[in-house]
Each structure stands twice: as structure tokens, then as C-alpha cells.
Amino acid sequence: MQSAALLQQAGPQLCPSSGAFRRHTRRRSGIAAPRCAVAESAAAPAKGELLRPPWAGGGWQTELVNSVINCKPLFARMKVAAKNHLKKTASLRGIGWDENIAELQAQLPVLEQLKREVELPGISYPDYYLQEFHAYEEGNLNWMAAFEVEPATEVTYVNAWKAEKTLPVMEARQRMRGGFVSALQDFRQQQGAREAGDILDIGCSVGASTHYLRESFPDASILGLDASPHFLAVAELRERERQERTPAPRRIQYTHALMEDTGLPAASQDVVSSQFVVHECIPEAITAMVKEAVRVLRPGGVLMVCDNDPQSKAIQNLPKAIAALMKCTEPWSDQYYMFDMEACFREAGLCHVNTVATDPRHRAVLGMVSQ
Image 1 (spheres, helix red, strand yellow):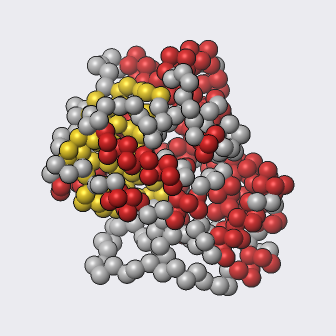
Image 2 (tube, rainbow, N blue to C red):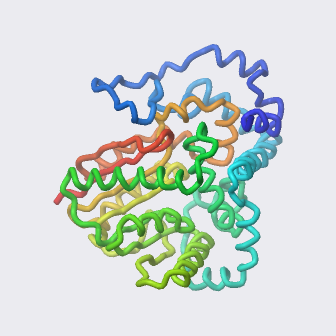
Image 3 (spheres, rainbow, N blue to C red):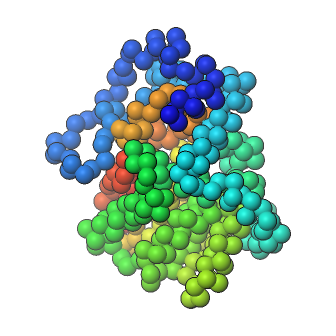
């Protein structure tokens, strides 16, 4: 039902019953994924038949979806439809999208002060970061983007298990974030990695991932890093609210910096985690981030990058209309799905590189600095 409503919002050009979609969906992509010699566990997330989604990274389906996005009048409508689709899912699942915005808007004077406190003067943003993103003309450098992160993140949680219509948001959060942490803990144990005393959360946004790392590593100091001072102001507000509710020694700090140039001392971190960041970046930025992570990790430290899984069956089977709506607010999707993350890890000097499918839509790529 959500897909049908979304197609109506996006307009007839995106309807699967249109001639363009009927003609093209009779064909099949020829990018076949290698077959694994070992049978997967029944509980393992389902893998698609391809190395990447057929609507990203080349081929006629990519060209079809991109041609729709590149039509400027349609693109303007698609941005609205994409946001409305997220908000409708939020409403159906009891996620207070508008309520979250109103609550933060009421605290704007406090947030403006927090932004002034955290913002690094004179930071030079790379061009890719300044482009329109997630339907915001200023990308992540505005208040509305910061106000909508929390409900959008909760929609991401429940969307990973779309068939479970009554799955509580917090249980979906536990599954998703817990899947990432389980992959990290298993990898650290298997490879004999160093203890996780200092953890860096790159691209921490408003602190959702940072807070889960704090819960999972009760003895660690956590540093959340992001390029958006607006996001960091919300993250700092939420952390101060937690401190008021439950007074305890503070273990989370936030810093304003670029992921490619953190400004942190070399060999100062035991774990570097990046969650839902790299699909928003150009390949050069991803490569630079991985190199910077290796620089700041101590020997035996671990890098974990979590994001959409190109081999996810759920992602590969997205209807083209939904894929088009998603891509219209994610300008670097094609580059991300074409990017070889494991090769990037190895070229940066990481060892024991491995990829783990953590849920039906996402993966964790892990590597360790040699001891």
C-alpha cells in the first residue's frame, strides 16, 4: 500500500504499469554474483543474485532511473514524494515526525548557543558536502535537516523489517544497531584486537549511533565526530538531557571536523566506527576517510563501516519507482554501489578484512590495523 501511494505521489511517469517500465522489466541484468561454496545459515539475511542493485552502477535500469531523476520538473516532485513517503511510514508506525520537529524548534535558542560552542571556525567543506542532499538545498548544514534526523532514523530501523508491521521501533533499533555491534565484537574476538577503551564515531550525526556505542561499551570513552554543527548541536542537547535524567560520569564528547581530516592525534583510538555515512560520499572521500581512520587507530585497532548492503536481496528487489525516489535525494548512490569497500580497506593497510551482512538491508565491513 505504501508503494502504491508513493507511485501516485511521484506521478504517472514512475508507475510500473507505464510503457517504459513494462518494456524494460522484461530484461535481466547480466551482473551475476559469485556463488558461495558454503551454504548460508537459515537465519542469515537473504542475498540477491547480483553484486549490486540493478538500478545503480551501470546498465539499462540505472540509465532508466537516472533519466527520470534528471528530468528537472519531475525531480522537484520526486523530492517531495520521497519526504512524504518517509513521513507516511513514520505516521503508520507511531513515529512522531512533526512532534520531533516542533520540540526541537521550541529549543532553537539553546541549539543556536550549542552550535556556537561546538562549531569549528573557518572549516573548509569539500564540494560534495555542499550539494543539495536529502532534499535540503543546504545539504546537512541547516536546522531542518538536523530536526528530521531522529524520526528518519527510526523509519530506517523499521524499514529493515518491513514485513513485521507491528515491530516496535526500539526493538528494530536493537536489532539493527545490535547487529553492527555483534559483528564488531565477533571480529575483535576472532582477530585478537585490542581492548576498546577509546572509540571514534565518524559521521555521528545527532548521536544515535554514538549513544548505542556508549551502551555497548560501558567502560569506553566515545568521541562523536561530524561535519555538521547543526547535527552536533542536537547531539549535544540530547546528551545533556540524558545527563539530567540519569546523572553519571560523562563518556561521550562531540567534535566538529571532517572525516577526511579529523585533527586527532595519530594512534589515539582503539575502534573507529562509521554508520550510514559512506553512501552519502564520493569515492575519493570514502578512501580518504579510511586512510584517516587507519592513521588514528592504534595497532590492533579496528575500523568498522556500516551501510547499505549492495548484495541485499531486499535492496536489489526494490521497485524501480522506490529506487528512483531514494536516489533522487542520494546523489552519490551509483558511486557507492560501485565502490569496492574491501579493496579500499586492504589498500589502506588493514588486515583480516571481512564483510558481514547484519540485517536484511545492511552490512558491516571490518578490518584491523596490524599489531
